[in-house]
Picture (cartoon, rainbow, N blue to C red):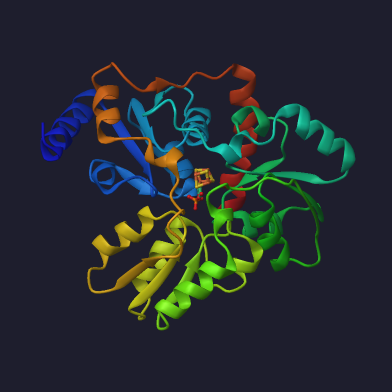
Length: 305
Ligand code: 13P
Ligand code: SF4
């Protein structure tokens, strides 16, 4: 079968089965073309809570499918490729979190959405890269334990010096490989380009950016900007999507290793096989996890509005 034939068959089956396909912006172009919705982690969560189809196929990583299941427990939710996990989401377990909480007893625990739903059951609220600043500023507590990404955490903390932050020493193994040397090289090669970066990058990289934002934030900024050239400091699929969207502008990757293998493991055939009933993984979560993580995620949606 050709890519176009597989896409056509996916479109037919999803309609027949009343299944909607949600895709994170780091998915490949051929997947975005069959998706009902494409966005960043926050947009996917909101979409998951609103959608009224019977089933959802998540093309992204496991915590995204879990978030979807927590927000729509009566729906069938599949992770298109069961191997797609986010290494950052697995950096801190419940035991580690409890130790941290004992060290910072009067701190509000703010979990990046890139955490397991089990971990979220013991956190006060979760945030995404696009909602973190707003949500942390709206919390009553002036002391915040931010887990697990200290890069996003520091970026948020800088916007509100009146609050005290504590961090966990985690981080995204992809975004942290980018260095100031990469910035120097890219700026030299493309002196007229703006540098747009994700806040999961190291602090010294973020400090040099012209714009800092989530995957959707970066895409919207580049689409609307009058500038013609951009260096993209997040997963390299965003470079490709922007090239499709804005063929008259030029987009350059900040660093070649900025490719998330975990996101890239999902293929068009995974969606096809999932709809055929011979692939994907149906997400099942214990009642207490749905309830506890639900409180944490719904608080994010409320405070993020
Ligand atoms: P966004 O919230 O920008 O979608 O980021 C999710 C992610 O995993 C980035 O690496
Ligand atoms: Fe996780 Fe980093 Fe991949 Fe995002 S880019 S899914 S944070 S490993």
